[in-house]
Amino acid sequence: MLAASALTGRAAAQGAGLSESNPASSAVAGSIDSDGKVPFHGVHQAGIDTPQQTHVLFASFDLVTDKVPDIVQLLRDWTEAAARMTAGQTAEALTPDPSVPPADSGEAIGLGPRRLTLTFGFGPGLFEKDGKDRYGLRARRPAALVDLPRFNGDQLDPGHTGGDLCVQACADDSAVAFHAIRQLARMAAPNDAANGYGGKQAGVADPYDAKPGVAVLRWIQAGFLPDSPPDETPRNLLGFKDGTQNPGSPYPAERADGKLIGNGSFADVVWVGGEGPAWMQNGSYLVVRRIRIALQHWDNVELDFQEQVIGRKKLSGAPLTGGGEFSPLDLDAADKDGNPVIGDNAHVRLGAASSNGGARILRRGYSYNDGLAMIAERWPPWRQGLEYEAGLLFIAYQRDPRTGFIKIFEKMSKLDLLNQFTTHIGSGVFACPGGIGKDEFVGQKLFQTV
Ligand code: HEM
Image (cartoon, rainbow, N blue to C red; front, side, top):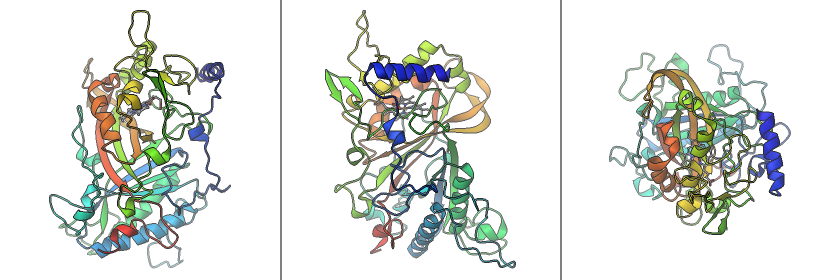
């Protein structure tokens, strides 16, 4: 089936005068060296415009300290450890001292960098929590770091929602991503390492009376992509190519009202410019959603309907209005009865910039699979029982969530045909500061005068 797909896609793309490869996913940055090391320092944090690695481990943390210097020290330690780990080293230098726990758990020794990127973000709780200005940072909360509104259909689980800090670890090896988060979490709550249990929670007695933690893990989510050839758009668990339209693509995204509309550049869509505080410039806002997909339900739906739901052909990824994968969606095209070929409720129409006053985002999501769970579906046939706890860890970057994700998803959450199969069960919004200079720690400019 996939071989046929590639053929169909290539043939169709040639017919449209386009090459079939995805320029976004094949844009391997020249600076990634042959060992697979993605530079950690730079104008932007790595892991946003880096071509997607095959694995993610997304981690959200709660701050449990009441002291700003603790947070600053943690960010210094994290920065140093991240620079080491993304270069394929242990989080800290190992000293062969048999009387202390090793400084690094060791499971990634010898694996190399595997294109590891560590992208740090600050959640609303760093600035203000339960109405309290707990770190004196409230006045510095960027206007764009809004709390996400409640969307139609949200069934958010607090155990997979929110957080004061986040780290997105992406790598081409799940062991490398897991290892990185494990070391950072341990540095945030050192007693964790000493006693082998969860970090010290505020107000909870610690039998070992070790150092109180600065931040503790709140939730983590692992995700994966198929190991497709680098210039092919990977497929999600629906079996559709996901990531065809994204900023930076040279192909026009859509035709609407007779006009061809592009995908926008990273500068336009992703990177915060002069409108943001200095510490956010060249940074971006991350919106994460844990979206369960009713896979058993989806697998029983006719191919034709699956394609109408998305608005694209399943095998080739081409728009229902024809051409190849990268041909523009023709949102004006109608059938002989005058009905739109890409339906009013099709996912891609609702995601298109022209349907959302020009709103665009960079999508950088991963599939996830957490086994089985007892689930009651919220759409007919209202199946209840053991189902896959699997879906999409949706991650989007943008200059401003108010004019990006929120703008697009407000309408999509009400009208999208895909909603029959998806439930948003986790969520977060984080401000990811600009890139980290050689002698800087992440977010340094935010803390400079506190
Ligand atoms: C499980 C949930 C979801 C799945 C399986 C999914 C899948 C897809 C697929 C297959 C495409 C077409 C290929 C492409 O252009 O990449 C697409 C496009 C898109 N999706 Fe989703 N998506 C999901 C959730 C969302 C959410 C929550 C948003 C919120 C903003 C979103 C925004 C978009 C946008 C903006 C496009 C590009 C539309 C265009 O300009 O053509 N998606 N998605």
